[in-house]
Length: 427
Picture (tube, rainbow, N blue to C red):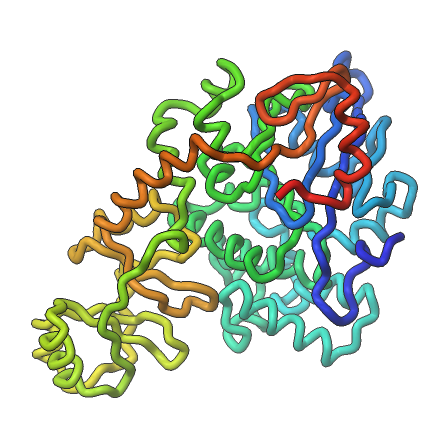
């Protein structure tokens, strides 16, 4: 097994490219294959979303990558190495896997759940504890509060965060996710999606994710693969080009109505300019903050805690009634992540009395404000950019012809691309 696929023992793992080469899966008693002759490039360091109707073969495709389901024929190549013949348990220790609702062991604490694979790899106790705390911080769970809890003591969203942490425990280069956020409420789902994007910005994994939610695919994916029955690739391209140029009526129907509005999900908050408001810290005099607001001609100030996380957003009137800023947290604070889409931002701002939203980055650190005007200006730019994408789509086809993006060509093109596909991304 290649060193790249082995969980790391020191430095962060580098991302790994994946190539499914003419992969077929036939289940006993079925006339048609669940996956038929699929060749598909998953570029190194990218997020690839597998979408399609129920029973189309997307989960089967995902599970064949780590050989939870064995392919009937074809090859699976990770970072240049054919892994279809190696020990399956060894392979899976080098690939993170996240399922719906986290899939945590109920009789084990959070720390013990996260430590499962490191223990299998014979890491020492101190190193495991350090890694557990590091990962809990990464998924925005305070280690002191959560490491000794059991899954039943966590909310659904918290369980899912622990599931992601467990999948990342041995720092695998590849992360597979099967409907990871399908069992949580919409608000928690948005936060978990943002958290995944934060994690990806820090760790640069190769991520393959199955979802039924096309909006989720647009938000998270660098590339989207749309499957029909038998894992037949109908279109494999960037979210921008799929929305602007659906390959056929099947794709149009799958996208659904309001494709124009879905363009709002193509631009994230970190791509627009943020405003810098007046800020204050816990213990500061409210009168000093009010004076600074009046001098700057602004109406509201953001109170930050010792870790620079926003906890209050106070108006001049509220400040005039205070002595010093306290550590009380406003549960209704209109906060969004820098990885949130413009659509998320607008949803949040519509319920905010200030017509703006507070933007946070990694570890929930405050970055600035996004306003309705900023979003409206960005919408025009996003719509223009959606028509001008130039990056080549990854290779994707079923036996009989290549499908790269929306264009169909001959089988020969696959031979030219396949040698580089496993180890080289196109973005």
